[in-house]
Amino acid sequence: MSDLPVLVTGGAGFIGSHLVDALLARGYSVRVLDNLSSGKPDNLPLGHSRLELIEGNVADAVRVREVMAGCGAVVHLAAVASVQASVIDPVGTHRSNFIGTLNVCEAMREQGLRRVLFASSAAVYGNNGEGEVIDEDTPKAPLTPYAADKLASEHYLDFYRRQHGLEPAIFRFFNIYGPRQDPSSPYSGVISIFTERAAKGLPITLFGDGEQTRDFVYIADLIGILLQALEAPQILPGAVNVGLNRSLSLNRLLEEISALFGGLPEVRREAARPGDIRHSQASDRRLRERYRLPEPTPMAAGLASLLGSA
Ligand code: NAD
Ligand code: UD2
Image 1 (cartoon, rainbow, N blue to C red):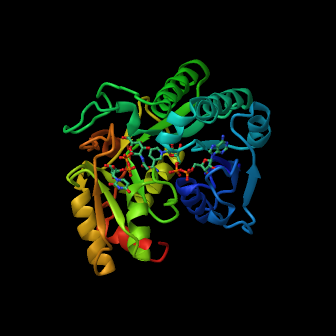
Image 2: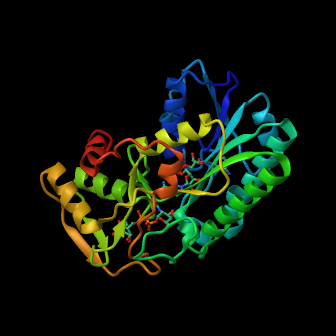
Image 3: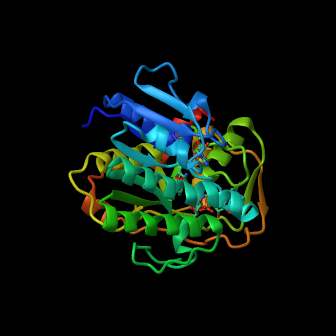
């Protein structure tokens, strides 16, 4: 473990703040760069002596260079995380989601940093592989600016690997859930929305027949993988799916939530969202080849952790 701080872009967000907690617990110093567009300072233990929160935009190359100075490694999570927001504002999203990545790569090259973890997404596959197990070679079909920026970022990181010796660990997250995932937008993760509404007794909207499936990954399981990637002696080329080859239907999810909350509020059924993927299940072969994966958190335990935070 290096004594130099780890730079976590987007560290005030859902995934980033959990990673920051884990890094601090392992003794790292952490510098967070976040523009607080969706992240919150309250997600972070602000008084911690080994944590610095710096407000700034990854689209600002000068700021990225300044903030990276003296760091030993980077975890690049900053992005507009909503696919729908990218559809509404492709230009603004591109600045954060693509230019931000390029700025991180350039600053790393200039400063001689090598290790960077990157949050890509299952969205790069579009509808391909639907109904099958999606492995990393499934053809890519980025259908939105969000997905196109993630895929382009992957390619640029790979260019900097080949040309400048960067060591990018690229992860394609499937559906991550857990405490601090913001339920406030209709495009937030379904689990954060459903559990918040169940806790408040507000009606739940189910789009479609509820038989669509997702490969849900509990945040702590993801964080364990990210820590290993940060500390691994070497990183093999090629992106890695972060999904667990498990698929859960929304109807089953609602049953789990009902069991936890002792019932459900009214469930209103609406037409399936246009473009909604029917089945999403990741091959976890490469993930398991490269990283140790203890028994994944069962859905009931993951949901129970939300009881206090919903
Ligand atoms: P989040 O919105 O909670 O976190 C994103 C963070 O980035 C926020 O703190 C936000 O303020 C910050 N940010 C956004 N634009 C920025 C900019 N231009 N400069 C600096 N900071 C900026 O979302 P999350 O779920 O924690 O997502 C983290 C990463 O994981 C994102 O890159 C997202 O695309 C990716 N991802 C998440 C999921 C999921 O299931 N949650 C799935 C696939 C990929
Ligand atoms: C996830 C990611 C997205 C992208 C995509 C790749 C999140 C929040 N989104 O989209 O960024 O990576 O995967 O394929 O992680 N639903 C309801 N009611 C609600 C909200 C959602 O029924 O109130 C349904 C929704 O129609 C969908 C399922 O729940 O069938 C999951 O929706 P989601 O928005 O959590 O995630 P997803 O898989 O569409």
